[in-house]
Structures are given as structure tokens and as C-alpha cells.
Image (cartoon, rainbow, N blue to C red):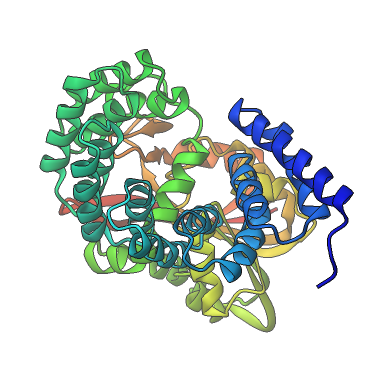
Length: 439
């Protein structure tokens, strides 16, 4: 190896020290260029790799941190701190299985380290391994008895394992000690809402708002239990997070436990006249439950595309191999901007989270040629109601309001049916199936 020129070594040392000084004063953005310059002058330096990776993680750049950590761990495979940062980068990139493996390496090198127990519990939760996450949280609680986040995470894990009463007690213990914990008020309100204690739930959502909780989310939940004016749509982050966390068990839960049969009902309504379609778009495609049924309704050279808010759902849909293109995004926005044109649009159990459908209908009219069809389901609102946000946090629509909107957007009604779409807490959920045609 060639010797490092003294001036290069000294310049690298100075830039490294300037980077450390910036880190110590919390100036993370200022630290990055100093450490990058030091690394360029002295490539592969372990201390520079570690600190620059930490800075990039702090700045929300996990993809930039990961190669640095890979290089460092090739040199120093017993560096527990580097494995911890490695796990953080992988988790931020959604690679939770790999993050868990890195955390296990961290704990093997530094047993019981609280800094690794916390992200390990999060990774296990993200992978749906909630019982194991609870065990990790118990260990973390023993190591950090005063940490307010641990009981909150325990509550979430208990909810995920079907133990809402225990989760409720966990949130109540947390709120007794920290009454300003807005997220705990939100979670407590959600459990009480599901228990039918709507007045108590409403007070929780008000408390969450009073203590700085998410205005959009808590306002949405509050409207669902009070009957106050409902927002026009469910919060995007809420829907995206809900279905990302639900993706792994979605099909089994929805079909196996709730008796979900909307895709079959919609397909039967569409197949009645024997028509076949060239370009089909599955709106809110989820894991692809509609895809096999739509295959039977396409022409031999027809295409099937999908769009959904949940990246995790789209990954499962992609694994089916039935879709030509899958788009990650909002249904109304996609219909507004896509250059594609379609012969058939289908939306199964999607508009329960959309609410007001003006933009969706306008977008559907935009992407359908005359004679193109728009098939969808909705939960049916109570008599005389155009749009309801129910205590289930799902929207219901009135038939007359849908007919008025359809006519305004140039659609002709070709079919409507009432049906039981699924069951919730052993109660049938009634809905409407509508088939519209672009005039």
C-alpha cells in the first residue's frame, strides 16, 4: 500500500474533527460535507465511515448510509454500534427481515443493549410477529422502566394480538403518568370506539387534539363517533398505514374471517352480458383479489393495471404476476393525471375510504372512452343520507346521490344491486353494486 502524504492525512484529520464538532453541536447538515471530504482524502477510514453513516441516517438518507456501513462491517465485523446503524438503515428502507438479522448481531455482541431492543421490537411488529415484539418490549421495559414509549408500543402490540382490553389498560397506565401523550389518547379512543363507548371515545379524540395530536386523523375519528360534519376523505397517511400493516394477513382475514365476497359479486354483475374488455384498471387493487376474476372478463390481448395507496399491498399484488403495471398512489389523483385510457374501471370496497366521489367520477369519465364501463361497490348509507362517516371509520353512500353524480359526469346506469358485502362483528354489512357506462 502506498504511503499517505502527510498533508492529505492532516487535511483529512481536520475535516473529520470539524465534522465531529458539527455533530456535537447538533448541526447534522453541516457535518456531512466535512466527513465526506475526510473520507475522500482517506478512503475506508472506519471512524469516518461510522460517523458519516450516522449523519446520513439522521438526515433521512438511509440509502446513502448503507454502503458505508457495509464497507465498515467488512473491516470490523464485531462492531456492535455499526450493526445497530446497519439495522436502522435497513428498517428505514423497509427491509425489516434484514434489519432484524442485523439487530440480532448487535445483541449477540452487546447482550441486552437497550438501543437495539427498541428497534428490534419495531422490526418484529413490522413483520407481524407481535408476540415476539411483546417479549422484546418486556425486556426493554426492564432496562428502561421510565421510558414512556415502551407502554405505548406494548399497547399497540397487544392490540395487534387481539387483546384490546389489555391494550386499553396499558394506555390508561401511560396516560395516568403522562396525560399529555396525544398518541395514547388516540389509541385509547380507537379501542373505546370499537367497544361501542362512543361518548368516551369522542372525549379521547378531543384530548388528543388538545395535546397536539394529529388534527386530520383525530378530527376524522371524532366525526365518526359524533356524527359531526365528516371530512371529504379518510386521511391518506391513515389509510396507507392501515393497509401496509394489514397486507400480510389481508386475504385470509378479509375472506376467511369476514366472509368478504365483493369481488365475486361485482364480477357476476359485469359478466351478465358476456362483454369482454381490452384495457382494465383495478382501482384500489390491494393484494389483487379482483385480478383472477378480471382475467376472465378481458379480451385475449387485453391488459390489466392496478393502483393502490399501500406499497405493501402492491408488493403482494405484483407477486401474482397478473398485472401489467402497478401504480403506487391515490385513486382520484391517478385518474386525473394518467395518460392511459381504459375500457373498464373496477373499484371493490375502495370508496369506503374515499368519501366524496366527485373527483373520482370526473377522473373516471376522463379516462373512459364512450361505452367504457365503471363498476364499483359502496356501503349503503341510511335512508335520506348522501354520505355518512360511520363509527367503523368507513364511509357509506346514498344511492340517489351516486345517481345524481353519475348523470352529471355523463354516465348511464347499466346495473345496480343490493348485497351483503362482508360481515363485521358477526353483523352483515349491506352495500350497493353499481355498473355505469360512459355516454
